[in-house]
Length: 265
Image 1: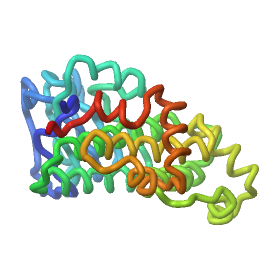
Image 2: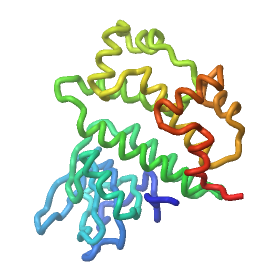
Image 3: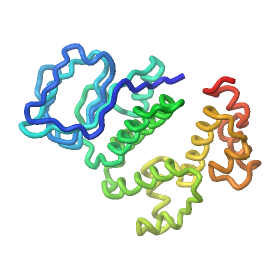
Image 4: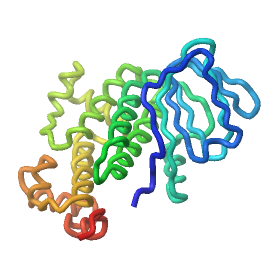
């Protein structure tokens, strides 16, 4: 079952200076805009100027009234719906509704929307599940961006965030803390300290989490044997994989598959 569902999506759309959207009762769903050029938003009857590289998350039912700021208007966007149980996710992540917020560098977020768009328009058997995974990662990354510690230079945050994205994109890779630290011209101890300060988790625990998240997805969406899943997730030993899975999640891989599978025989 999909709890976050994309209804429509657009990546890197461009419009002329006359661009204007006015939906008095909203669009019938929720709308995320990643704003790439200056624009004007009317919120509660007042015009608010949005800087480029900002975002707004419109709640279902909110009036949507925005336009270009005299020049070209460009954005990424997606309309989506979610179950009542999912509303708390946005509160927990600290993502507000109906507010224009500047973000700075939006390259990673825009790339995720591009990937979401590719998955959304693909004719794949598990398209909705794949899109939902991308959407959840998008909101996690958006939350990270919103709540990065203010005393850490944004350039450091962007670099560390890129490392985090790579870890989740290639969970099976044999990640080396020493190598990652060298890439960023940091000592190992400084790299580990900054990563923990930024994301609240150690690098190695992040690697483990990324592997287990990938394993959960494969378990719930395929009949791939457990030993193959262990290898696909970067484990050299399937016994170690099963022990770590059970230790972290409280279920064996087989038990998790039984309870969460998306494919019914």
